[in-house]
Amino acid sequence: MAEFADQAALRVQAGDGGDGCASVHREKFKPLGGPDGGNGGRGGDVILEVDASASTLLDFHRRPVRKAGNGKQGSGSNRSGADGGDLVVKVPNGTVVLDRHGKILADLMGIGTRFVAAAGGKGGLGNAALASPRRKAPGFALRGEPGESRELTLELKTVADIGLVGFPNAGKSSLIAAMSAARPKIADYPFTTLIPNLGVVEAGDVQFVVADVPGLIPGASQGKGLGHDFLRHVERCSALVHVLDCATMEPGRDPISDLDAIEAELAAYEELTATGTLVTATGANAGSGFVPLSRRPKLVVLNKVDVPEGRELAELVRPEIEARGLAVYEISAATTEGLRELGFAMAGLVTQARAEQPEPEPARVIIRPAAVSGPEFEVVRTPEGAYFIRGDKPRRWVRQTDFTNEEAVGYLADRLARLGVEEALAKAGATPDDDVLIGDEDDAVVFDWDPTLETGQGHTPGPRGTDARLQNW
Image 1: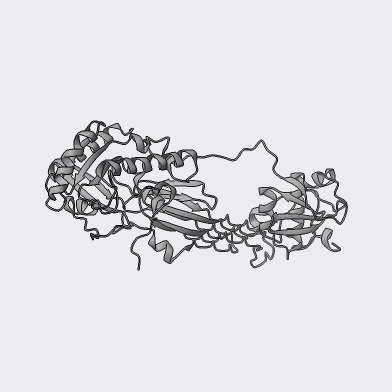
Image 2 (image 1 turned 90 degrees about the horizontal axis):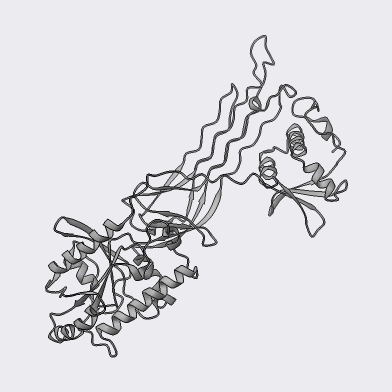
């Protein structure tokens, strides 16, 4: 069974709000003491939270659906229903949340960072909250609103200070094993490493995290091999280290051509993310000190100099690489030769990158209220000749209405009339008995429009739970 996953589909369902209660206070010698129905409880949210104990998205492959608790119904004596329990879902540091269309919703960095993936529905009002001077004892209550439902994609991008990049079998896994306590799989065939491995390295008083990024090949930026899956983990690294194989026996390969090939793939991947051809978190990071891959601090490691032919080749290509302005270190991960000097060089890159990082801003909540200048609803003619009412308010009001209660239906008619729906239908050319649809497009409620139906605050609904206007409706 797999032990690591860096991409997963997740469906989240927030809790529904509890229904309000329609109740009348009764006690001895006071049979009708007024409405006392309580409000329904709020539905629970589904919250994604970065947790240090989470390191993979594998659990979402096992359980791809997460649902929060529903709110409870209100009751008499003005008792509100209990709120539904929030569901906190633990995710690894560096998780990117995308919607079903690939739009980035959140880039979760830092232990404790939270994102409300689905908001719970509001509880319905009880009849005590609906009472007014003209409707002193409402015989109905509002239903709770359904919780938000979303289909998300989670992507994990490794959070590390140094990223080791290079061809398969260049010795990246051996290097991270020699410099840290990490123990990745090491073998003498390509693509031994299929998941990124992290190791903590200390050099003097500097401690940093090194990521062994799985091997890259030409065409990785176009998805060849597991290119996109591998390159995703390079984005978070503040510095890159090219690990070049000086003892490869493959024809047509040498350290210079390997370096050129990997640099070309990093540049191509960067161009894809910049143009939006490939959806990544780059755009989300752009305003927070994000540095393109081509401008990350880099150094070059010539590995396997314990092999005589490898040492000769390293001495041959070193001047050409240094002429490009890159620091070069000759090492052997097998014998640990040169690892001390390399560790301090990496620490220097990390110290420089950390010094150039902008000061973190204090955490704050950004509120983006919806624009209020636009219309609250619109009337759209359907191909079948019906009239569809679009708008958040009408849709929410329909969801709150108990259509088994005539008084609740009359209350909905009054709310829609005050909003201006009646006038808008008349202007759109609606005639009596035309079909009017309100709600979700795939599950709308159909009404027969009767423009002669009396509406407004001045109407007296009649006995509790009934509405004289609807007796012959």
